[in-house]
Image (tube, rainbow, N blue to C red):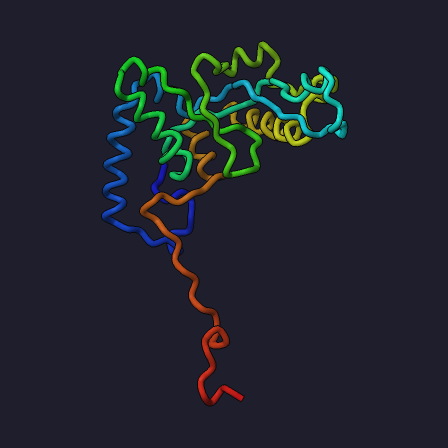
Length: 222
């Protein structure tokens, strides 16, 4: 994946020293990851999701049935990604790096590092990545056998909030669209659809448009 993900190069300013430092850091980090982690980059499947159903109007109803409905569990389609397929802040530099730093003290722990996953169907760029424990990941093949690749029945989906139902439907469509792609093709598509700038890249400040943007000269003042 590129340093500046699918942005117009003419609008980007690159700090070359910072870029060199970043590329060294990226190389060292990816090299340190065991194959048990890297082989899953670009793989699709499913993971448990949890829905806080707040669509109900019975705010004053505290009976057991309402409490049970508050958190509905289901399986959502996901794409496992590299830490360098996601924005540096906060996902990689804060959340993932914290987990990685603690795990790399032990080879055994590093092999069990949680997967970083993009949740298909997400429409909030600030809330579309999850950490998935390895034992909770369900392969595409197994998920299909369990029926996770199909829109839930009316009775099941009615337990989910409207937002979650819509995201799940979008996500399943995205999953089907990516199913025939290679892992690398999926990663490229992901960074194309969700562009971001690395730390060493900044957008140029827009130039002032027209003389009207500048303070008027004495001759222009009335």
